[in-house]
Image (cartoon, rainbow, N blue to C red):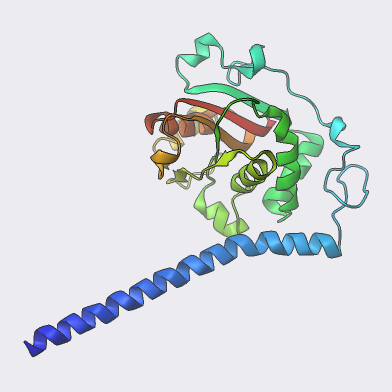
Length: 256
């Protein structure tokens, strides 16, 4: 009896310590995700960002220079044929779960520089500026949920944040749209420099849906920074559809 009591007390203490440790881990994780954004905001107040084009203070890309970005014509994201409002064409739709894919600009010049600042220079203010430019791509008069396409966790650890998440959250805050981090990234493959066939292979089972209830029966709009071959968006869209999404579209900042 005494041995059983001692064993129970030891197990109870072990469970308590584990719960406390898990709670502290969550606090630390949340702090790490929040602190860089607060720090970037503070630093931009003390030392304002300069426009990447004209050098004026205040924003990484000022309102006068945004029109210099190269516009993207409404076209099927895969075959690049012109289409109504960027809808996936009939021939490509048979092998894709993406209904519409819209891009704000072409991945070159100023757009490329802005994304570089966001992804490799820690300038999280760029996410808010990108979100502002994506607002015009969001549909009006219908309900949808914005879902970021998760970045590989190794890159998140290196940067301290997920750029797609920052963009999607900023876009949701600006438009009042619903936001959900329903998708999770399982693989660690980096697609930079890979061909479409390599990307498709690497992205098999790369995503999973952690919160199906948040997207069941809803129009899901995936949010990402760059569209290259479309393989990443297709993999995420497939998972969303299997989880019960009624329709899956996507908005991206720049198209290669």
